[in-house]
Length: 84
Image 1: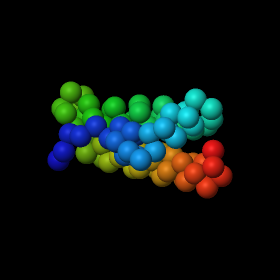
Image 2: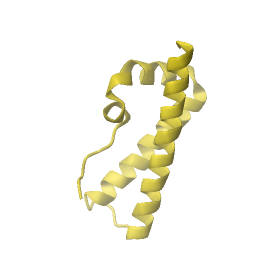
Image 3: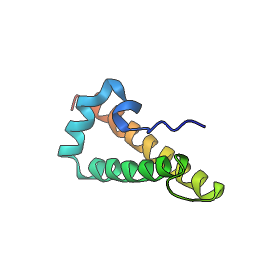
């Protein structure tokens, strides 16, 4: 098991500027980004054994993180296609 924190700028290294721009200009994107950061932080705490959690709880958090990442990726792709 790796203990790599999956920060958005690491997940989307080619979109760092777009991530920042959307977070500042799109409230929905900002909420997704904040939610992703919160879930990701909790996963990192569990994997680093700082916070206790069952395997099932960890898996649910990972699914939630993946769902948020998919939504963020879709918004990034849409912004790229519209030239935003």
